[in-house]
Amino acid sequence: MGSPLRFGVWALTHGAWASRHHPLDPPDASWRRNRRHILEAEALGYESTLLAQHIIHPSGDDQDLLENWTGAAALAGLTSRIELIAAIKPLLVHPVVLAKMALQIENISAGRFGINLVNAWYRPELERAGIGFPAHDDRYAYGREWIEIVEALMAGRRVDFRGRHFNVDSYQLRPADQYRSRPTIYLGGESEAARALAASSADIYFMNGQPLEDIRALIQDVARRPRKGAPICFGMSAFVVARDTDAEAQAELGNLFAISEQDKPTRARLVANADPEAQMFKTAAKEARVGTNGGSSARLVGSYDTVAKRILDFHAIGVELFMLQFQPVEDNMRRFAEHVIPRVRRLQARAA
Image 1: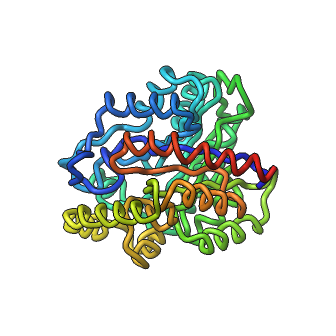
Image 2: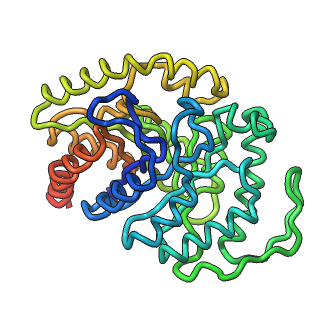
């Protein structure tokens, strides 16, 4: 457990990360709520937040959705400590434009910005815009060229690039990063193409929540791959249900499953519109879960002590950043900060 252990929260860009029918947590993707949520997360001691990206809501284009890059820029000027990670689908923004945007938010935030490269799975978002939806591995080939250009430009280098998808002539961006060499690069995805791209091009591989042994296998696979520079680090998404006792937590998880039954038609439409080659949905089909991106599959469900020990089990195999989801969001984010984070820190101190 030599690497730092950090806690983050998913920003409410989509309004909710579990059921859209919870009576105490109605979906609200407004800027006002997101601002309040992330400012409170920072005050509670959370160290990072992820702003997911879609242009139209995967639960239905009649649903509200926060634009994550303008949201990240606004949060950069309002926050003082929390890391801001904005997801990006390469097909939506040319790399020289994206690199310029990233450097601007990096400088507004005084060195607290990261990009999370995701190569898209929701077909209507791209197809209806006329962008097209290339095959899975073709999207990753595009993403490989894209991130090579973005990384070099964010690092302040002059770029000359000739590839299948891009031709860039003597391009350089100023001002350069005033706080470090460049913003952090996160990359998610479980396919072979995603793992290979993460190993070669990312600082942090961002995994969907899964059981401990499955996460161990992912970490071992990506960590063994050749790369230049510092070793890759690892983050994981997870949905948390923490209560005074294991029984109370399991009862609440059962309640969340019952509420989520109302979301079945929406989930079915979402899966029907997803790329059938997306590994995320193949993994999700293995078991029922609450939350997105692996959700409760990471088993962070139980008493405060149980959840704290479970987190340290994941940290022991290499997970540095835990990006968390809750429902209802605000109350359980506070509960976790009050009861679980101190337990984790005490256990870490005893083990030191």
